[in-house]
Each structure stands twice: as structure tokens, then as C-alpha cells.
Length: 123
Image (cartoon, rainbow, N blue to C red; front, side, top):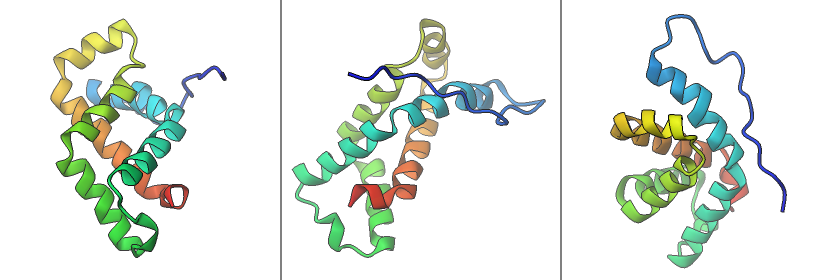
């Protein structure tokens, strides 16, 4: 088993950055990047289980399918959130607890975009 390490993303923190943006760039984005392969694999598994023939869809339809899944499937959304939130430290989780709905929105938005940007890995 290979040890996962959270990547350090530089040049994302600017002066005057809000606490939420700082959390997004220092915590959320690195965790999502670290979990990239699992997110792609779980999305492929999701499509397989639901018998979605993703490969036959034109590119635009693939992207809108990703959007639709992240909008409508609460189980999948919660799974995705768990994959990310499970890597928060205790302090990060405390901040998350106070801002859960905003952070959840950001996590799902970034993750959904990441899958769309990696559509070739899904097919």
C-alpha cells in the first residue's frame, strides 16, 4: 500500500484572502488532488453500477451527466464528501463543522469540475 501525502499547492494564497478561500486552497484542493485516483475510480464504479454507458456519450453530454450526478444523487455526493472530509485534521474538521454547507458546496463543485477535466480517465 502506498502512503498518501497531501500535496502542497503554492501560489494560491493571496493577501486579503478570506478564511474560507484560505481553507479551500490550503486544505480542500490538496486533499482533492491527493484523492484524484480514488475519485476517478469511484466515479467509474458509479457509472458501472448504474449501467451508464458513458463511453458512447458525446463529450458535452458526458460533462452534463457529471453535473447531473453531482446535483441529484445525494448518496454519491455524501460518499464524495466522506472521501475528502475523512482527510481533515481535528482542527480542520472543527472549522469544517462551523462552515459545513459552504465547504460541502465547494468540495462538490471542485470535485465535479475535476472529473469533467479528467473525462478521458473516466472512459
